[in-house]
Length: 428
Ligand code: FES
Ligand SMILES: [Fe+2]
Image (cartoon, rainbow, N blue to C red):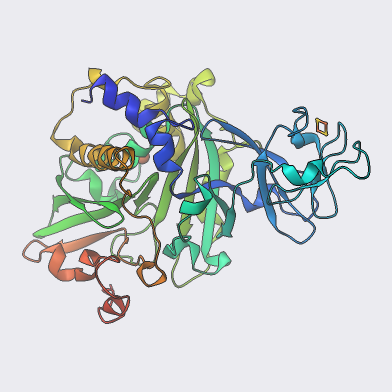
C-alpha cells in the first residue's frame, strides 16, 4: 500500500507537480507518425501531461508540437492552415514555425517588430519506429534521444498501436510489472494442449533488480522435466513496461514495449510497440488494431461493459472479454480514475509492482531535492541498451539465469558498448 501523500506524488503529472516534472525529464511518445502522414497536411490535437497541444508536419517534413491556443488571443491552432513551413491561425493569420517562432502577424502594421518579441510554446520531437516522441522539459536540460533497440531497427521490423486508457497512467503501468495476472486475467480455456507455460504454476517466484534503466523483473515458474520457465520483463524509467508479449518461449528476437503516457491525471495513452531484430513484421502481429477506433478510443470500454459475454466467460476464457488489450483495460480502468492505494492489500505476487513504485518514488524525490534522476542519457558512449531484453525461456533448474544470460547484467553507465558485442546474446 502507499500513503495518500505518496499516491498523490506518483499519480499527479501536470506541469509543476513532482511526477510531472520527472516525466518531463525524458523523451516520451506524443503521437503516431500515421496521425500526421503528409507534409502540409491537417494538424492534430495532442493531449499530454495535462497540456493541450497541436502537432503538424511542415512543408519540409519537420514536425511541430505547439501549444494549442494561439499566442495572440487564444484561438485553437487545430483549425489552422498548415502552409509554407508554418501553421497559420485562422482568426487573424498569425503564423508559427515548428520552433514556435512567430513568422507573421499580418494584421499588425508592416513595420511592427512585435513578432520578434514572442515565442510560442513548442516542444522538440524525434520520430522513430512509427512514433513521434517529444521532450517537454526545460530546453537546457534536454537529454540525448535514447537509442533503445525498438527505435533503431528498420521500420518494417516494428509495429505500433495506440489507444486511450480511461484511468491514471500508473494503473496501466503497474499491470505491465505484474506477471501473476497472466495466469488469470488472460487465461483461455480452449486449446488445452497449447496452453502457455505461465498457466502451469500460478504463483511464480519473483526477483527484482535495480538497473541503470529502471528495474528488471524476473518471474520464475516450476514446470515439467525439471525445468524453470523464466520471464524477463523490464520497467524503463519513467513510463515504459517492456514484456515478452506475443513471443514464443525461447525466442530472442525482440519484445514489446507497453507505454503509458499521461494525457491528464485520469486518462493515458497506451502505446504498444513491438520489434523484431531479424525479420519484418507480419500483419497478424498487429491484431490489436482491430480493437481500436480511428480516434484511438477502444471499441470495448467501461460504458458497454467491454462487451463482456458471460457465456464465453464460462466456457472460453477467464473474463468473457476479447483480446488482452481489453482484459488489461477492464482490470485497470475498473479501479476508478485514480485508485487510492492506501486501501489496497499487497501480497508476495506484488513484489515487482512494489519495486517499480519504489524506483519511481526515489526518482521523483531525487529531482525534487535538486539531483539528476536516473536514466537520463547525456553521453553518446552511454547510449546503448541491448541489456533491456525481454523474453520467456525454459532453463534447466540447475542453470541460474544470470549465468545463461550474463549480458542482462551489463550497465550502459559502467561498461563500454564493446562489452556487449563481446558477449553474444544466447541463441536458442
Ligand atoms: S487569435 Fe490567432 S491570430 Fe488572433
Ligand atoms: Fe496484461
